[in-house]
Length: 327
Image (cartoon, rainbow, N blue to C red; front, side):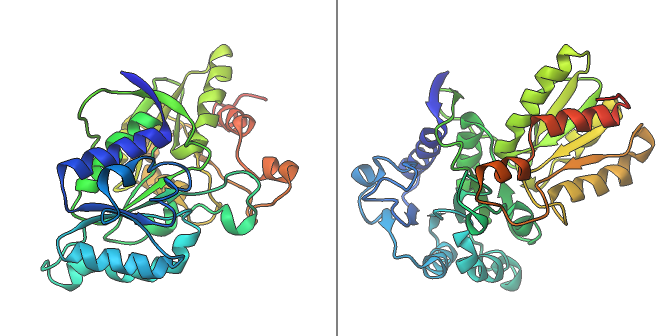
């Protein structure tokens, strides 16, 4: 094992796949000369040249469309959005072309393309740059949605995403690019659609994904000191979702808390809640609790932002609620 940053894991995954397959290339704003807005493509221009690491104009609709057409014609592009907030400019190409072309063509075309970049909040970036789009894209048949939470998962999942024959939305976080973690040496892939139990426990199941899962880890340490053992499941892939792992855990713990950095209405936690009550209702000893951001646009003020985001204390309170324990 070696210890590297999240951004380095992303770079390694892309570089290894580009060495393996010449049809793979990277395009996006500042990915080449500037080594990536978050330095996730550092050194790639030097190795692969300007025909495979391509700086684009500030035109998400344009380069999302170019990549989609390219993928339909035998290439495997990786598209970096500086933030998924900017993907809204190109969402027509993603949803109406990339996601639908296999079905609309009767299987004559597929679209092996990865759209990647940061999602959700990243400090004082204000309302239009702090939105989580996992549930938006997961609502689209034809797209796969991946949200890693650590360097090892990021590398293994990204390599699998690049090799997938369908379009994949790969969501990162500006606040995780500097995170360090152990990454296996040599070739490895993590299959899409398989959740991971990050912490074993017997009293309550906590399901989360992405950077906000760190709040679950912190809460679990506090709760363990009080005799409550939390089982933490990292979804890793939002679509397709690993319902089996969630259900098996709930049938063991009989309680479920879902932590997600997204607005409360119609999100990933809502879908999990429905599936669990539909398939494991008789195992529940308490109503399911989901923890989300406040139902407002993200504030700019650091004090208000801290109140807006879910945190460790919210998780502790939710777990005690389903355990019927007083705070």
